[in-house]
Image 1: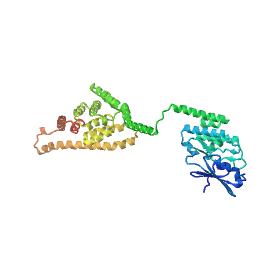
Image 2: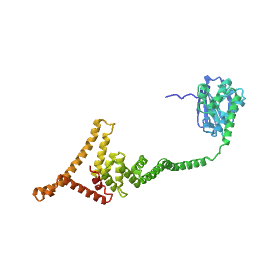
Image 3: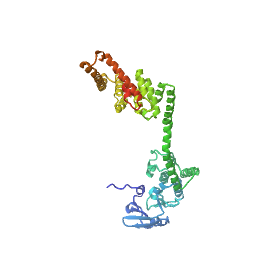
Image 4: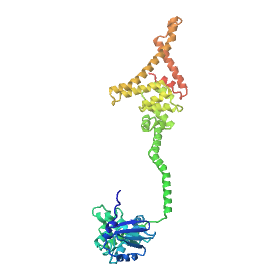
Length: 447
């Protein structure tokens, strides 16, 4: 078991010191002290009326039992006091040392040997008695160094008492502690502490003192207000940096749209997510992209006919994504409508984008294009099959002899018939409500 480390007081006295709630017991070994008779130290019992001292001498030990009232405070409690009170206490200790006039009694200045009452008056538990109890002699230099160390401990408190006493020359002290430890005389030390008191009093005069309960209430109120204001502040910042510029962009894009400056519409809204745009802004942006898209006039006409203020907003998003080169997103929308024409148009765009991507190797391009090309080929096969099914009734009539040669559709006649069917389909789609997203584009995007 690790032995208890000796305190500075125990080291100086070569004794054991124990403390309970209301008493301190100092035990000296007879062989280590100079005292011959207990009468030599009997007067210690009356030196401080605030303490009741019992002195017990045996063959081996001398015990000094110091009883103190409950109102007496241990030195460690000075840390709990305000700065001004600590400075007053330090000044009181200096005065106590200055007025000490007993020639036979020697002061031992350290935290374990000091107590104080409610008025911050310091008291020493133990005094050395000349030729009887340690300290036997008055060492003025040591006593002054102890005094400076105790003052630094009280006022600065960055280090322990023994560190100030023994290592102040090597420690990194604060300016205040360094000034205290560099004092050359008692008068200098007293002047330093007095000035510290005056400075703090002057500072406190500029402050308003309020009850702690009121201060806590005000702090909680301010904290609550701060918490409530945080959302408002965040929203204000969001509005200033995001919402207001976005609304301004919407208004400006509408102005460009009305003046048919479609490229400016696209540029003005480029940084904003189309899914969060108002319906009318999506409509204007989609039309702007269609106007700038590489389509035939017939295709463009068909697409423009199907984009109205009653169209499903997903169709707007499809053309916005196509215009922005976000072909995979556009294809996903087309698949949700199961619109094969829009799907193939998006796939063709995606295929060209991959071909033009210089960051990909040839092998990577082929790997990405392969599934796209497969789907395009399947669509072409389906179109061919539908074309053959459309020619089948005419061939059956010709084979049965019921159809005159003049009425048998040649390849050119079949093509003319297909064009007529497509034209009729386009007209039918044009007459349907614009929310029907399949027919119009099927007629308009076939290649």
